[in-house]
Image (cartoon, rainbow, N blue to C red; front, top):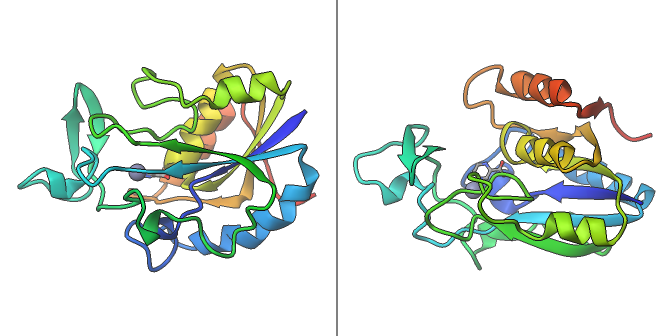
Length: 202
Ligand code: VGL
Ligand code: ZN
């Protein structure tokens, strides 16, 4: 069994959103076209409470893009984004969700961020995605969505570690590039870890 994991294709991560990824909207038609090739489709959703510790606004005097320690873990400070039950947290309207069998929400604990769809950034709590996939005898995972250098990367890296044959479909991902070259470095890091970087729609 293979699965397509659609990472964080939410309004705040596409142009016009609070943490807009350049060309983030362009992944949507590609992902819609890919979905029928998979036995199973799931999605992750960044789903923060308003008091989340990853928001610069919750750290007086700190700026967006600054690095801090949040409960002992390195944390980049972001604009307020993907707040639970706000339009920015909704999936992009044009994303076809008819075949999405389960949504895994992450980043709900105000004290810790969660880039991966599998675990929080401290690997303390599982989202249930690993168990869900193993119960369904999934052996091969393909990851798409936003953002290549954060949530997509950490989801793919955890997937490899958890024993899944893991592909990243480059054409169906876009990154933040907070620093120039971040996406290229993320792709290299994934490749070194055993993720197959594949071009696009077969
Ligand atoms: C993400 C930064 C903060 C992502 C989520 O989906 O890649 N990036 N929260
Ligand atoms: Zn977030």
